[in-house]
Length: 378
Ligand SMILES: [Zn+2]
Image (cartoon, rainbow, N blue to C red; front, side):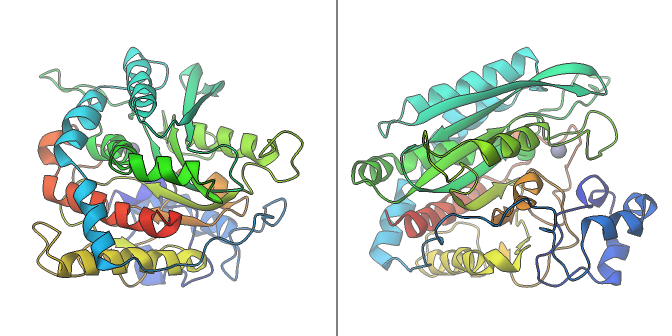
């Protein structure tokens, strides 16, 4: 399984089951070549990947899970608009968008414009910086959108909008990373659009927990994946948030205000197998399991033959290194929504809109909308 190699080295289960030797054996030979010693360094014995976090989180506890009535589930599911997701949000992202490129700037503007078009009134900030890469110093820009910047708690949903540097083929086809991660970013924009009125009301009512959308730059490595050549945007933003006060003069940092960090990656291919990665957030993963089952029983999921098709029991097929790691290491609870194994088209020129599965995309959007309605009490 070649796909494991690039991301298979950190963010191990916490403190849930560590991958068995058998699972490790399923990982890429390259991951093994990188050494179990490296894995041991990143997975503290006893399964505590937080050992290097500076401080325990000081944020108030996250809201308790609650179930929404079926009528509410139907209402929220009906707000999702696949056509809008595809045409308005996804298609403009399907260009080469490597950090600092013209495509990156256009896609970033598209994200900002899409959020500013919402009635809810998103507070949109750009976290721009430069970093040294194997290709020299490059500019990176994260987009940080907060529904109510004054709220004390934040549910953060994250995706990466950069595309990997891959050479075009002989026919001139370029890498557009549909699952990696244009579609996850389009899902976030669709959730903001579908739930616009609900989010506006939640903000006006001064709800204690608000929504934050993070569109991260520079997730991809330029050369061989390493701690210094990957996760540029996530590393910068996590470090910034760890010291930035939630409000001027507040003792709580922006990072401590994140009660749950939900990372979406490599979504959009048919029948993703998504597992819970962290025991700390297993209760929230179970809410996704429940939402999938309930929407299925209500007949609101398409091309969905079994009630439990995406959000599955059991451990993932190996750990996955991704944008959550800098946040996880600082003690932020993480829900990592990434299919394992990765989509067959991962890091190939075939990762295009044609190889996405629209019913799966719509189903995931509905499940996530239900999840937000529960978490944010919309
Ligand atoms: Zn990638």
